[in-house]
Amino acid sequence: MPKRAKGLSAAFCSTVKRQGKYSDGDCLMLIVSNSGSKRWGQRLVIRGKRRDLGLGSYPLVTLAQARVVASQNRQIARDGGDPLAAREKVRSTPTFEVAMAALLEKKAGELTNAKHIAQWESTLRTYAVPKLGTKLVTEITVSDVLEVLTTIWATKNETASRLRGRIEAVLAFATARGWREGPNPATWGGNLDMLLPKPSKIKPVVHQPSLAVEEIPDWMSQLRKRQGASARCLEFLALTWARSGEARGAIWSEIDFETAIWLIPAHRTKTKEEHAVPLSNAALALLRSIPRTVGEDFVFPAPRGGELSDMALSGVMRRMHAYEVLNDLSLPELGIREEEAGWRDPQTNRPAVPHGLRATARNWAGRKEYPREMAELALGHRIGNRVEQAYHRETLVERRRLMMNAWAEYVSQESRNLPNVNGLRLV
Image (cartoon, rainbow, N blue to C red; front, side, top):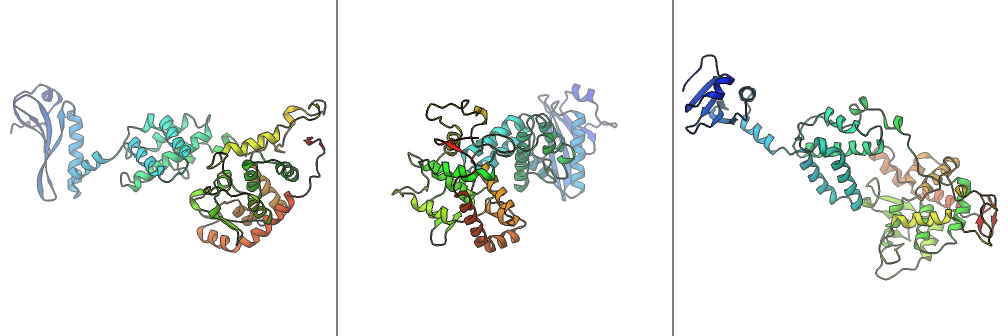
């Protein structure tokens, strides 16, 4: 083999044409074929066996690059490792986009709402894939994640916060699959929270508009005058403190009239844990008043069958806000500005929405000095660790029933707080 005492030079590598193997020292060789093509090779003893490794073609791999790879291979071999296995692992390591697709495929079998899956993919493809998509999951650093987030952290903080969590999920999935090791560069606590301002400092959390506790009896009285599955579902939601999706998706098999328990399965709750709702007498009476249709599982079916849409409940609320003026009276004549009409949040003056009924109920429970853990559990929130959660679920059901009955009695009392003119509530 032709040898050069001082190793190879970049000029020699570019000009040599004679067939042969030219050593650069330390087992690295430039191999020139009879056709004139050139490639890099390395001969090492790996775990007691002599092996020949290919390091790529020249000039695609430069002399400097070949030396770096050769040095890394020698170190791996000295430490008892196998450079070939390490290279194979790198070749099998997916890019961020590939790992993302695998995670989304897994989630498609977990998320029952197709809209949520689409939101996951849309957020990642819009903001993360352009910068991280082609990077191997092993290559992504805190700086890379930070670069993605800083572009929208101040202007679209809610989206950015969700994006961070979704990037973290992709990389956590890659770790679980054995594609990467070490800390997750997208975690918040003790990591990105040191580099980015807290979301609460950028944009205060805006809660869903709720009704004033004093107005809920009047609101319930008006609601009960309305007909249809959507109005009854909204009434059931108010009586049970449930989330919209939980109430709309309620099926008869979840209702146990004998024990007066509505058992919401884990896959339908936000916490992904089974949630037992003790039904008040008013809630039971409501359920018993609903005619059941053969072949229809939903308690509150849509007009054409199946589950009510989220907009169905919102529509009831909007119609309750948009009061009809009777007897040719107009809002100005009654001294009411149009922007003030309706059932409004006492803090923000925004029109109340179905989800805000939960906040109204929580405020009422606080005023009545019910234990915090009992109220939070009634809302389907997590309390403490899993042992504490199991304990509260078992011990607080009947105490929660007393609270729910007290709530139902409060919201069912006669309207007394605000005057009405021909059914028009004056604000």
